[in-house]
Amino acid sequence: MSQQRLNLVDFSQPRIRTLHLTWFAFFLSFVVWFSHAPLKPLIMETFNMSQDQWKALLTLNVALTIPARIIIGMLVDKYGPRIIYSGLLISSGFICIAFASAQTFEQLALFRFLLGFVGAGFVIGIRLVGEWFPARQVGLAEGIYGGWGNFGSAAAAFVLPTLAIVVFNGEFGWRFAIASTGIMAIVYGFFFYWRARNTPKGSTYFKPKKSGGLEVSTKRDFWFYVGMNIPMYIILAVLAWKLSPTGVGLLSATATYSLYGLLVVLFVYQFSQIYKVNADMLKQGVPDHDKYEFKQVAILNWAYFVTFGSELAVVSMLPAFFLETFSGLSLAKAGMLGAAFAFMNLVARPSGGWFSDKFGRRLSLSILIIGLGIGYLVLARVTGEWPIWLAVVAVMCCSFFVQAGEGAVFAIVPLIKRRMTGQIAGMTGAYGNVGAVTFLTAFTFVSTPVFFTIIAGCAVAVFIMVQFMVEPAGHTSEIDEHGNVQLIEVS
Image 1 (tube, helix red, strand yellow):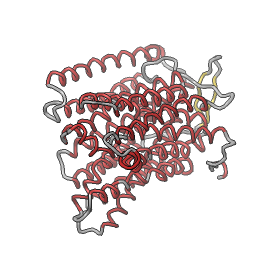
Image 2 (cartoon, one colour):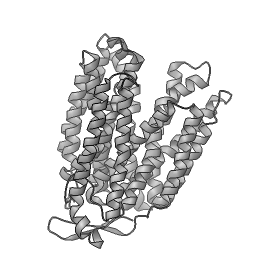
Image 3 (cartoon, helix red, strand yellow):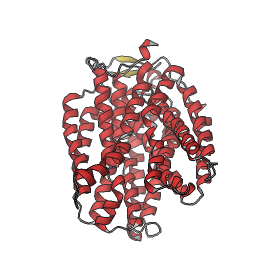
Image 4 (cartoon, one colour):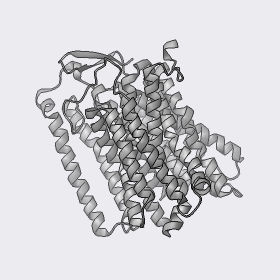
């Protein structure tokens, strides 16, 4: 039991220092990513924006994150977390400053689209934390990283309006507030490069044999992997449709069809890269010591689809839900009540990781997914006749299971195949965004109770999938640069 405890204030331990360095990098990436959201009225006033234009901006903010997480996952496995996290923070800091300096809506939209790339920062820390912590502690460590870092969006919501209105009072207040987050990201990017290290001293950083896609172990897994990429392209097509004349009208019909064609070309190109990476496997097979089951990755993808995907979707609609359900609530109070969902990240994600470390990976994830489903079924029955405090309790209980489930997912990701942890985390993280777009699209066609019920139904389907997941046990193996087989403990 003592081995499972982390002394988070013992800065004499390099791994504890690395954990704090990493979660704060993720925290800053989320501050930058969501810096525009709490300043909506000021930005809309400056550019005389319509509600449709603002919705387009929100869509653009997440559009690039899906492919970005795949790309960043490949880069972090090849080059290491230290340089990739530093580069991401520094480059996104400059883009954030450019967003704050935009003079037209078109410029604003372009830079917000590019800032979707910073949402991929999460993937980098998953690989880095996984390098520094043993299997018996990795779930809790990843939970702290994800939960505390994810709080950056809530911190932005509370701090940036005060900076804009009180500290930088004036016409350019919101610009200075957003630019300040970009400056912080740039400074911290250099600091992170100075202080962070990819692995503990003496450890090997294992890299993929080839870049361009995940290495799989069987022909069946090859086609399984190809098929699991299709939903990501479908969702990107949905995002293009939302920006088309049928949606908010930011793109012309010609531009929309061009994007559809581009997505087809990108899928064909990705298929060619996946084939290139796995060509030798398809011809000669894989040694037994190097095999893993891709179904493990697929199950985690769908688990994150329903956990993080539902979180992003619900956080987007919850303030309006409170405002419309309970009469007499002010806009500010509804926003604060809606924020209760995100606040649970501070304790829920670490708790989910700790449960996974202590009680088993599959059992913990199964319980949390079922709790999530029950939580959403309860929310589907909330009406204006409920006491408001009871509705808030229901939201927070549901939120706990959602975010603890996220922690349980990423307690498993680093244990599947060390040299490809970044790519596995990237694909799993991308599926979270796929879930968010899927649920929000469904929300445009159904009532709120049906929306919550749909998520609960997806939770049941994922629970069944999780029962087919093989518990990581014993050791996995990797081959170092000298050709020696090294065993890595996973239980």
